[in-house]
Length: 266
Image 1 (spheres, one colour):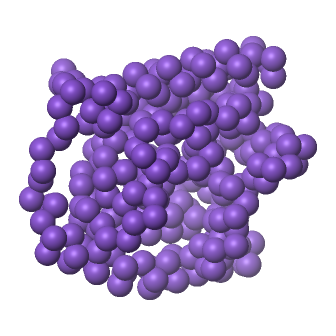
Image 2: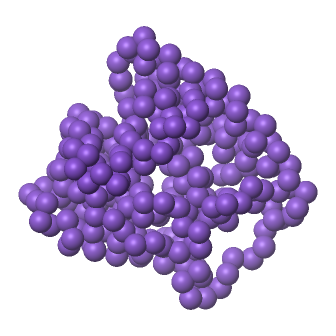
């Protein structure tokens, strides 16, 4: 049985909060990020240029996972999965996650088994090396300001999901600056309805403490990814998006309440 922390108690200061350790891990992370990104992004872009087809466990899956794992190791961050046994193995799913830090992406990419692709805002496409590599690997960019284009992109992604790709969406739309959950947008929820696959709520705990938005120095900290019970979408239509959003939000809030981040809501 997993113990649930007292939400009124803020986690105690760990040895990893010591300044020297923080500076050392930060240095190691920032020294590693450029060469690791050049190498792994280069492999993905090269595969795209050579028209290497996607296959489970192929070059695109390997480069993404290895890149994320090595960056986490450089940053002194360990990740634990809780409740993953609830995730269906016989069909693709849409993971709906909170978003507190860049380390949410690294933790998810490094540890969730199987093929995983992210739905990202179009601004990420302009990031040197990383943007083209993500596109080559099959990640999808969404222009959230253009509703018609966004819905068209969601339909495209839904087709990929039905072919066997697991997808991660961040319904908050951006990283939280406070560590609290932001309002959920309906667009990412529509994706699960369009694909007619289960929606799996997840909560990444501990990532905000590592690197809050706008900060530079890391605070090495363990991360726990909690998985909720899958929410079926078979038979749901576009008109059901509001109810599904509320159900999903409630599930993510419940996972948060069971995590070490619960004290922020007191």
